[in-house]
Image (cartoon, rainbow, N blue to C red; front, side, top):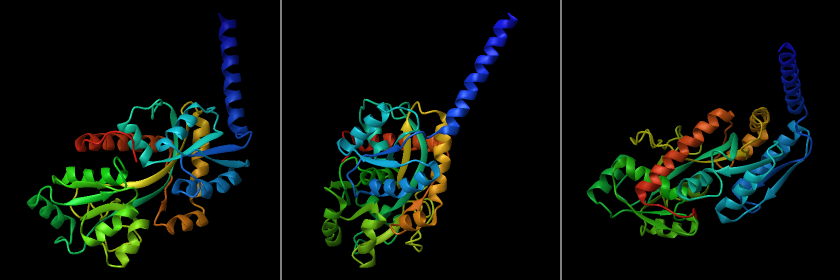
Length: 323
């Protein structure tokens, strides 16, 4: 019996030593960051901004591998099947959580991926056609209740974050609004400016020029804190919509079986990269904040997001592929 115990101790020591050695030597070859969009998109920009900073920390080349198509499913499936050794990573966004919330997929969003860290986040801004008789969210809510089903909003498509953000507001405020989807929010601007459509929630980048030109009026931003680019505009929570928080965020994950020690190492290196002044400055130019988060906290955030959008989509009757 003593010999068996001694053997087990030796095996455990060797196993721990091997694990520690692997953690110390990681990475052993170039890394790949899979990007679910074409070169030049927002996720691609963030991946290419992060890659050289991570490369410096890890001492290995990082290759950005664009795999667009099928609302990100191609990239998600590729990542889920990739070798789980820390050398295969993927950037993704809130859109991919929404897709998993309303579609059947070949992968399990929580089993098949290991969250590493959030990377960036930017709020939406809630804007209305200026002649609309509502200069605050409370006034808009009151007007919508007095005129049920008469107000319309634009989005970039069915099941987009813009649609679900508006439906989330409608459910919390207890109002009825009409959804008008477009192929990209840019196509909705003429209708918003003319008043054929009354409102939308969309990115700072797309809305700021029209706010500054006076063709659209901001009522609130959708983040928990006020936006640096619109410091005088209240948050939705300040405007009286308790619990309302929506951001368009970007993050990094790996295949689900990636060792925890590797995930923790990568998360720490990501946090370091996101503190780099050049990274912070280049993200801020688009109204985006660099945001890092430990893996455990980020995993909790993802479950909250998934539950929120699953419930919102069900209430709004939204189903099918994200556009």
